[in-house]
Length: 186
Image (tube, rainbow, N blue to C red; front, side, top):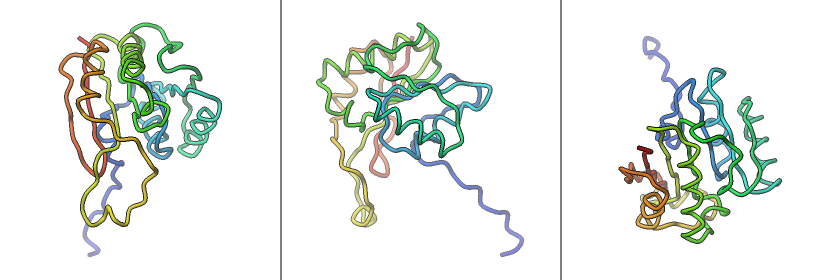
């Protein structure tokens, strides 16, 4: 109908669940979905900052491409995700894309070290959001194409968050074939 207001395009679910705001300092660890990575990096805007931590040059190039496609400037950090070249307390929100094969394939001890490193770089009151693939159901799942993933048990992720020092760790949501966890730095 011509009197209806146009529907505003919504952000993808992972972007909404991350809850990034303008002006925040964000850290993205790992890359799984390039489009989501670009939109997440754009959320802090010019008044904030986004950094993307990847394990190797191939992933760094993918991150650069995602940022270029989204029209975003972001710092790309290449190196092991458990030794970030960031100052203590310099990040407001850290987002780990745990479906990235480099992170999903880690041992529990290695994942604990990644979460401890995120804890180190987060400011007091900062949040860590963990995004991972979950069971997808419904008829639409039969027709949806998803890259292959390693599904991590919720207990393993919550245990890694607790070992990393996070409090109030919880499963935020499980929807559209994805799960979202949150841990808070006291």
